[in-house]
Amino acid sequence: MSHDDFFREFDTLFSAMARRARFGGFVPNADASLAEDGRSVIVEVELAGVQPERIRVAVEGRRLYIAGRREVAPKARGGTVLLKEIPHGDFAKEIALPVPIQRGDVTATYRDGLLTINLPIDRDEPALYAQAELRMIIRRMPV
Image 1 (tube, rainbow, N blue to C red):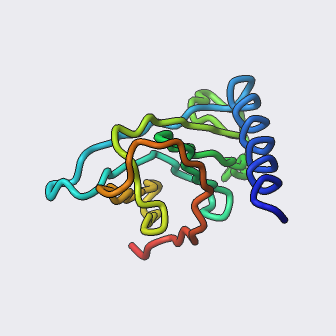
Image 2 (image 1 turned 180 degrees about the horizontal axis):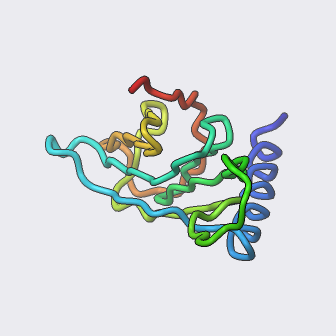
């Protein structure tokens, strides 16, 4: 698969997920901060109940994209639902990054329903347009 084909496929996948997230899906809550040492941007995204293999993370220029799907959990007991506030289905989140990122050194962890993405700042890269899917394995951390 060529470089252009890869990004065309990712654009198609993300745009379809983003459309579904607007129509019946949800946008997860997120926090972004500069690390204390000033060397990275830390992004935390609330994704309780999402399986790590259902999460996709990408950087395009100075934008971080998180997309995926939270499956409907089976009901623990029979009965009638009295309150339904936890959204399920496709989700998508786009976050503007204030600085260029070293994409090869990005890490992510998923623990207690919180996805934490560590994005090291690239101090050598000028603010040029760049696009890349982040290839990483997101592992559930033991409690």
